Image (cartoon, rainbow, N blue to C red; front, side, top):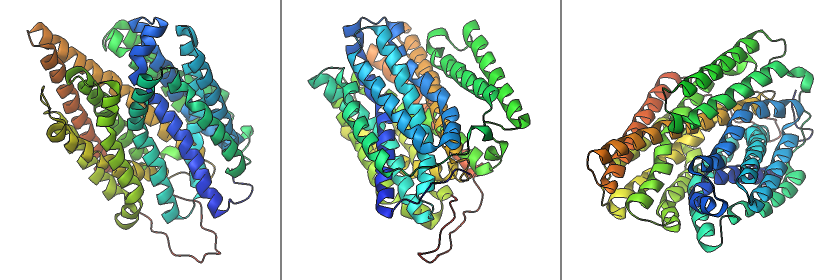
Length: 486
């Protein structure tokens, strides 16, 4: 059984949460901070347009495909050990990326960053579940964790714009070095040691090969859709092989003596439903995080720094809701009701943006949508709690890895579907004689509309599947241990 060697003191637990949140922040920032600096990177290193996409794709493929395996490895060899190793790998790869002077070296460094991020991020929630067994404290801890992930993307755009404009693109990677070193130093001191189950409890090498190769090929297929198209022979072939590999993994887990992913993890309707809701929600929110940045720059003429500042209100309201009220609302009304409320706000947000004009006023046309991003501050903590609700002490790392994996799949699908639709609509509008601003705005409106539909689907899945009664913890004396269940 994977249990801490000794319980962490209360103050150390919150410090440990800060370390875990810092690791997540670096991961999320790294996913968004690069997008702002892409033009500068292309100009400096001489990337071709097709090659430039691999600055993002190399990271996404490594990160998304290794999360599930890394989460299970954390259960087997110890989550603290894997978190430390992942943070060290990510920090070293960030140094290499900052020093890169050729496209090949930068792409290799980005792949290394993805590997390190997967190792650290996959076990973060698992460590949190062990550190905070009491429901009220766990709700607060998950709120902090969720805020870090939700606001990190917006903060990354602000930081990326500032660093690129004032220094140069190398510093979007160098900034990870002091943060990573400090996080490692504190993590060694405060993260509780855990023994792990041992590799013999789940060393399914065949299953690991099947799931990792299937996810890697599947994510590769999705991120290349914009280049090759949904119906091209290449997309259909690689997609079919990915599905076959993942199907073979599912069969393997049902029959293996020591499965990498025990079927009991997915037997909970709440866990399965929460992961499906997250996949749809993250896919839909791509239209807000990325399409809005493109609209601000390409239609309204904002610079990189101005774009980040324009989206800062979204990060602020997400933080205020996540840290200020989400834990209390979850405790009082239950995660399902809070999640549905958050999803409803996000549907309204995307609906408003679907009507954005060519000549928009920030205050009247965009700021209301930024403020409605508070729905993400409600939805994500509740969804995270539901996604980890079926995790026992032996499976917390696996459940954490699964939750992060569905997030990355949702992001990849959102990028492929919405960007392809927007680009196609823009091309048709240009061919019909529309101005570039009108054509781009029409494409972005379509992406927002489809995003609202995906969010509505997430609402329907949450309403239908997440119907299990919420268990209310009974008060216990302070000296009595509280079971480590979600």
